[in-house]
Image 1 (cartoon, chains in turn orange, purple):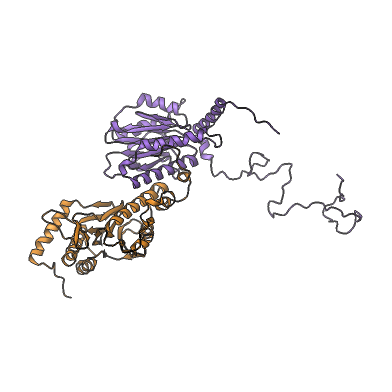
Image 2: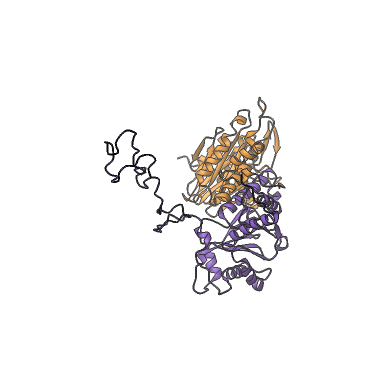
Length: 276
Length: 313
């Protein structure tokens, strides 16, 4: 670290926000402060695609596929797009992969920083609003094709339920009920979840539903990757309950994915919903 | 013109050190203790809001004694430094040694600069490694000196009495429960007798390498402490320490004028500049305009004494 006295700005009481502190102390570290030359930069970097989240009886699950694309090229097969934000929340990001990962790191640090300085965690709405502020700061780059669109979910200990928030590129924050999806395959995933979702799911049923939805997204969207059975690459799944969040281990996800694949062998379009 | 007195540098440093030491000794002690799975911090701190032990980063913790506002500033600076470094580089690149160095430079510069009051604080920075042998415990004093501590360390209050007790009873590689019991007994020990500190007054936190989360810092709640400490006899809160009265003491109705207390309501022989209730200035006898007889119109009847003209006493 620095080999002389801590700068006065470090010792000044005031903001509990890491992003605000960084904006004063080292603005070049903020993803939103970078000058991007005019023009469309959308084709320069890989894009992450579909994220799905659903609430269940005792929490919320979020899952993301593993594909990143650059135009018609598959840039990466095993990218991770769903990250824990803190102990009780998780954030999944669709859009420009490099910026998205950087923004997640900033958001994680932001939540942890607040917790350490203030000695208490932010409320669920407070976390959702901080994420909105970070996305809003990125609007200039979004207009040049480097958009980042997150999906935020977590267990609200005060309200005693799982909650899901979606965003637009201008930082608009919208609370969703039951389930939601973002990214290029989100239309198909949402349509799938509409038919599959029940409000009495337990954790495993909710995980099955979101993996089914990702399968349907991968079925119709070229930018979304399905379960890769030859390389054993499966979606990243996070489950959050009142006891905290955890990433579901790959061997547990693979069991559920294998079951879904077996049933799709019989009926490729997935389970049939009742007509009335 | 007044001549400044000559003060030798030795004398000046000694005065500043005495000043800082006095401030630190006024508070209660904090104990840091290495046990099998990490580092334990115990302090007697009746306040639930003002922590003496806090988390800095994944494997780094901070404990301090002395003036709260000063060590709180240092703590926040440490959190900012660690988070910024972890964000710019990687979480593994945040080290306790680096943080201890930054603190040492800061405290040392403030101590030796003539313009600032030295900080009345003493600090522990602890970092745990993968094994007990890799654990680090640094002690930083008000003048910026860094010492590497092994086993246990005590600062603040009657540190030497507590340290002597620990010297006798500490054993390396103890379990967490044993370590807590030893530390709490040491804090309750004084030259005259042993006291049972109420569990509600204890602030206990650990850096525990067996935690599965990357953040290894954990505060132990009162229920857990009651479990560990069991029945120890009659609890006896500490007498009010000077540090308890540092903040929030309201105006005292002493009934007499204390020139040292700016909040007292009594002014002694000096009349107040204005009425403390209405804010009105006191009624002064008017100055008689020249040529008007002293008993002319305009003399307020309330004064009762004949008005005095200029020059009269």
